[in-house]
Length: 88
Image (cartoon, rainbow, N blue to C red; front, side, top):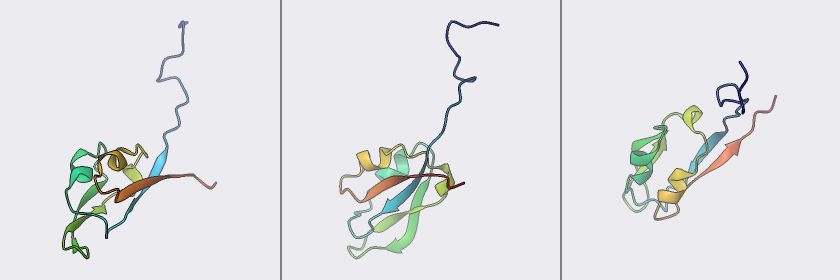
C-alpha cells in the first residue's frame, strides 16, 4: 500500500530516556511533580528534608521520557531531568 506520507507506526521514532534529579533541600513537598507526571515516575518518600517536608522519590527511572514536565510544574525549581544516552 502506498501512502502520501509515512505513518507514525512505520517511522523510526527514538524515545528519549531521562534521569530525574531532585534537590531535596529546595523541595516544599507540594506533590505537583508526583500528581502530574504522565508516566508515574515519582512517588512520595517517607523521608523528610531539612525544612521538614516529605520529598518525592524516583520510583521507576526507566519510565522517564525526559519530558521536563516536572521542571515546569515545580514552584521551587527543586527538580529537573537529564537526557540519558545509551552507551553501546
